[in-house]
Length: 605
Image (cartoon, rainbow, N blue to C red):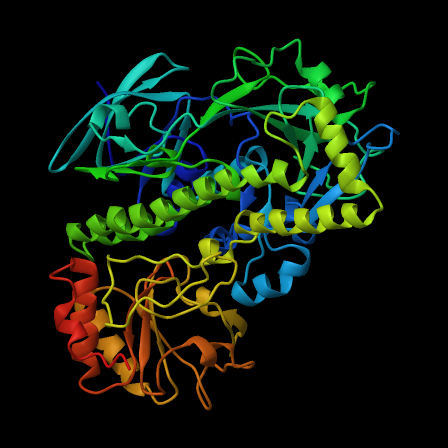
């Protein structure tokens, strides 16, 4: 049997797998990706990329291609309406509209927090971009219609048997590491890793259609929730899927949800009647696209499950193979891409013998904690949807007549109608935890991992997660600030390049750090870029944003990992910069006992 050797085998060609291939290639790591599907999935799955995800795509030169086709960020609103069509007294009423996910009134705060706006782009449009970039990288080999059939592993690597489904042949790949990006369908079940958490909280289903809705939409929206007056769904959700945006959008996804104990299921024949009824457009004639081999309806269970561990030997789990979120807050795909970002620089460092294998232990340690946080938040926002019916005065299991009566009272131009609308706005305002949770999206932190703690306590955060409070505490994402350098304006998040190097950001009196970084980088073989910020330095802080968040004196320094997380913070230099940096780097890439040595000489004041 033919056998190939490669550093990393990636199983699964969805967004996380393709992102892993292109990131590893950017880091000079040969990789093979196998995917059993011939084409990208036709199912309109994830559609929202948050700012931290856009930052990592920026690092790897993909963000511009995404923004070029994504819906304009200014248009990211979420609407609740009675219908799209009809001319009755309760038809086409806008009940409440939020600016959401960094759009509209949220834009100024989001722009200050990150160099990259959010993006609304359906997975069906994102996947081709990622695949095109992955195929363009010389170190990667993307193989569709190739399926993993079995694998074994030992202390040196993984041997996988791959079936070429098109050529009907079988070959082996011997990889030093394997990344499971297959959603858990073929690998995790064989590793004995349990998925923990609640399941079957609701059944969600989606359809994908082409339809002209331009006569029924007052403007653009990321999500339009529509009341189902006469059907079994309570609410449905309409999402634009491009390629045009605004009322002239051609393609749409529509999402329904069933309660866990509801015996009703939408049939193929019932799709168009259900859409005509809930949208109140009796003559709607959409083209319904097939999504699976069995039909045009994609069903899945809402669940919040996270793997008990993210690795087994030389096999590492990412994305849905490691965690599955409920869809509210749009955190699932984002968390998967952030898994890959955390993992790839560590894999590269180990494979290039710039770090010990123990560095990879920090991948699961860090990302499992972060993914538990986002999965729990997604579940929290899912359960918060219970306020929606209450906001509009619907009793439990409301009948059509009860819904109409409640809405007539809610919309009435009377003192009590104004009271009901005020109450509704307050109750619906709690949904900001879903549509504006900037701290969940940008405030990622790792309680333990590949960094040197500085002894400072965890800073207080906004309990509703809407306010993001940037800090340079080790284990946290590096805050964004615009700097002026000789080459023009750059973000602090641009200083690590395409995840290739560490960066040491020093104060204006921190020239000793430049000499230290040169010595340590040569000793350990890891590139460390030094950036001094301040008066008379190569980089200036034009608006004072960096000075407000840096948390160090003018002799201090912050060491930033290739994935833009803070690895070390020295408030003020009090000792030998070479020794401080050498010991810290040793703790970070080789992972000895928790960084005690380095922490002993860090002034965390």
